[in-house]
Image (cartoon, rainbow, N blue to C red; front, top):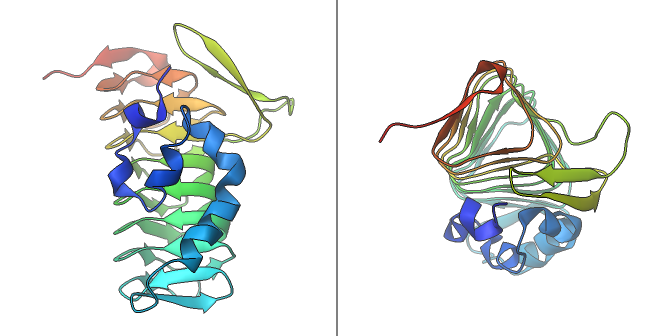
Amino acid sequence: MYQTKELFDLDKTLAGEYLSGFSYAWEALGGLKSEIVRIGERLDKTEYTEISPQVWAHTSAKIARTACINPPCIIDAGAEIRHCAFIRGSVLVGKNCVVGNSTEVKNAVLCDGVQVPHYNYVGDSILGYKAHLGAGAVTSNVKSDKTPVAVRSDEETTDTGLKKLGALVGDNVEVGCNSVLNPGTVIGRNSTVYPLSCVRGTVKENSIYKTGGITVEKRK
């Protein structure tokens, strides 16, 4: 079972100090809203502007006029929020991130360099440094029977107690187009998910998740 520090470089997000206080990253999601407000209120006002109540954007961020951004939200340096992006609130968008056309994000941390550029849904999730979701890839955050989400690995199953939990996607993970990351999915660092995949459980770091759920280790 991957712990927070094993999935994410915590120097690559404004939420690093906050996330470091949790053994498992999903434990941070419940308090994320208030933490974003706390961070936002302490940002350097010469670099960040409160563009609307509890929505802070770095002066170098690019935000399309057609984007909808609900509070609280922080948009860090060099990030790009494109046409018709929908940020529902409780979202931290890291440095040089891309939130693209018709992408919806809620209660989530996008670490620096994350790209969710085309028709993605990211809910109740944490995406690590330079993680990328291909067009149409989504994090499913609610089970069909609405029971609490469990996180599973080969070694153990942990009940999170959360009715809403999307995915924990490690640093440098590539998720192929139109893939679905089921509730409670954990993907280790530097792994690749083939397009059209339906992923559940834990994918080991430095792996390739192939069609049909076959996982192989990446060649060095």
